[in-house]
Length: 349
Ligand code: SAH
Ligand code: SF4
Image (tube, rainbow, N blue to C red; front, side, top):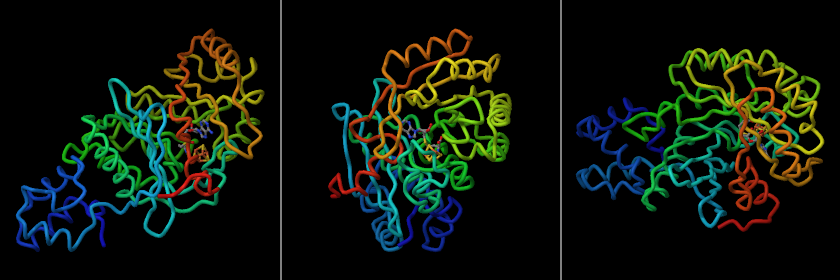
């Protein structure tokens, strides 16, 4: 059956009109979805006949949850969803005192193939459709609403390269931000990219000023060519120029992500090169301790090396934070629950 969120507002209103229902019913349906309704029958302010007709024509969601895991005493939960056609993607909800953040997937697998990333290790599956991205957020909102919480932030840091599925991602961002659906301000949405320069330039013109995160991980081409293979096409200096132009155009400070890999990109030389690359730029550096992935040659550095690296970067005048390691036990980094399910280490419910 057709997933209801695969219809645009205009298409759903047309369907309603064809079924002798007023257009404003569309807003009511969306509002119920945003409040976590799991069936059309639960949408109590719609006439019974309309609820029945909707249920006969549409699914509330196309996603089928097939595995879950929890960590941080339940503050982090992760769901693996099966998509129509059989691929699967994961979404992670992280609960904090003042916010609830969803880490969302934009592709089943990823075509970029960074050697430290669990997602990049499986063959690329397919792009998600915009409604499949939005449905992850609607599901998270449902879970959070049942706990008296509200989804406040969304980060595109799950499986996939959002800029390689550009139009569906932009469409989903518009939906997430739509006050009639989830109403999450674009500034609370982070799009993380390995660096597809033409798409960054395009994004700057969309009038959806999301926060841009660049997965930098190395400041010299020779190393970044290996860690983030798309660098061979879009070299690091040009990438930073494009990202900063995005920041200037949107007024949003750009974030640069740096996965800390022991002995690979955590040396004094790396800190110096990062300082030179970003000096004088309106930028924020986020150091991410590597979350170990089986069958990769990489290791997380000692805490003391992370601290030293941070101080070395800071000493060059940059803003630096170290990301907390939320969700390690939940396999919450990028494709890791998916990987464990594939390897048969996690039971599928
Ligand atoms: N493809 C996009 C978005 C998804 S990955 C991108 O690469 O930006 C989100 C972030 O998680 C990226 O910064 C990525 O480098 C990081 N990441 C991937 N695998 C990781 C791991 N095993 N440990 C820590 N961070 C990881
Ligand atoms: Fe893809 Fe991002 Fe993983 Fe690289 S880090 S393989 S771009 S998901």
